[in-house]
Length: 277
Image (cartoon, rainbow, N blue to C red; front, side, top):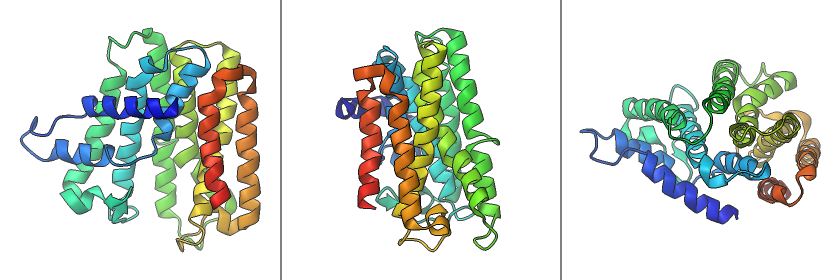
């Protein structure tokens, strides 16, 4: 099922992105270059998985799934800039600013973020306006000053020497986990699922989002000199915590029976990375 969804996501992303030549500059090319690279598409899969979980049609939430991926890609483009993390490679290819220059990379990120909200606010989405507003409001909070952007701001201001376990957890929650959690709730919100279902997805997303970042820290343990949670609390303790969080996320979606299969597969995918870490 996930494989089929991934194909749908790729096809729809191609539709939503501006065609090369549609603007007399390299902006469309820069946007497509980063979005259509080989990403795992975890966030859009979570959007579709949550819709399926509550009995909805995952294909109907594709615009929101793609919008979430566009937002994620904007954040990666900006994070890679020399003024931020100063990375030269992303997803197996040169980063946007290395190919298109810093100015065009910044504008590509700006355009992706803005266009994502245009995609989600389309009056022809087929969802009730109130449900769409709820989803957009929740997402805005997850990626703004109290979420992803705030987490990145703290991350770049704090040196390795000054960082503590509590502060790393604070950054992980806002920079990564909130966005993942929200992605896992959007589908259910759009389908106006009952309070209990949304609450269980909140529990699922909270556990999964933090586990995802801890696994990332574990995989970076030997690759980077940057202080992360795995280095502060120790590799084995980090693995144990990640495993407990992944199990907690699975437990949260047990009540949904067989409709939890796509979300369960996503969790197991991250669990496999943990085993290999």
